[in-house]
Length: 550
Ligand SMILES: [Zn+2]
Image (tube, rainbow, N blue to C red; front, side):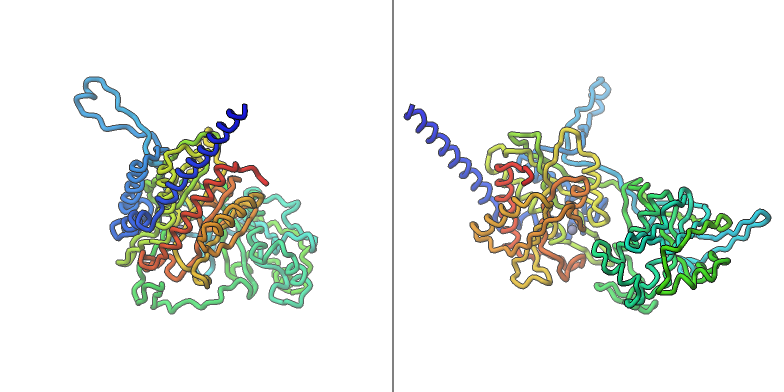
């Protein structure tokens, strides 16, 4: 009996030792050279800034897929068919299908600008007077992703402010279905810090003034309004920086009298994305506001008094005042692709997704934006982890999916598309996101700063990473932050919004962010290697320990 026990003991310790050995083999595969090699191609001019849907992005995606294949990562993209010869087709053969590394989807792209017209119709039983508004002078329009036409009567909701403390809820008891909501930005007294309204609303720590404005839009949308028209009578919210002289254009990397092409002039959407959640917001001038409230002139001036009691406001139906809004967007379809692979785990009921976006902003005005940090660094981080796990020669405890996202720069579209199309048998328990993991940010005094954000309730992650950073002397200066639903400008947001736990790794913004100078030369490769090793070890611990909420 004793003999058997010690044999078992010997065997388990042998297994533990060999598991450690194979894990070390993975860790040792992450070196400066192994990181540098794929980096040099992906961040080179040949991939032309990897803008979604362009040849450069396709080249980068093909390269990533070929590395997956080389490492032995299995494909998790769409099914594809092999080319067939004419002879075999004529002989009645069927094309052979196989799983590819690419998840293909369509995006709509076009100029941010759209052709917009807005008119104000005053309709009575006997006549209709139409006033065409001038864009830029009378109004501006925001928040639309596609062409539209709306014609509907107006309901004036005053400030549209919902506040328990002030006992006002103008959205209550008013039917906004199919109407256009007209309201004033801010609230009475926003410019007067001494006013009662200001004091009360300022002390509400759950809502900033900006949040108050966002809530108004959201309330109007939920109430079934077709659009929101607003007038801002206050000094607050007016952008502080005076714009450049109109004959002089300056976008940091270009200065001159000729208006240059710019990545920000373009927009990209998934077709029909959140149509239901989109509400056009029209900003109008004072004279337009006055002409809508024609008969209620006194109302407007009384409402501008800082002491105005907003709870006394009653909504005003203006059935004779109709807005007619049309917006035409020129859009074309582009084809985009995520690159997806996986290693099957002992337990394939639980899946961890490791991702980083490979796309960047492209090529403009003769500059190629190589986006070495943003986000070749994270893409190579993901690739290095894929390679390391294959180097162990062992099945990981759980299945790991490796993903290179596209379309991140214009709206996280690749990861959004992925999470909206997760197959039923893929139970994702964690997303680890790497986006910009190689630079020294502006606020980074030690040069070793790393932001690690994770979903609240998974504090064990923090413990794991703390210990690993100490034991291995990675010397990373890690800023841990847990949040209910971490959100930000990267792909982990797509997962967090679906309720999936996330870990986001990020070394911070720097002066070359979205600039042609985001180049390999300015990366801190030692730090990047340390971050990848930290993630590799951390992931191994997470795989071993399981992922119960603590
Ligand atoms: Zn990025």
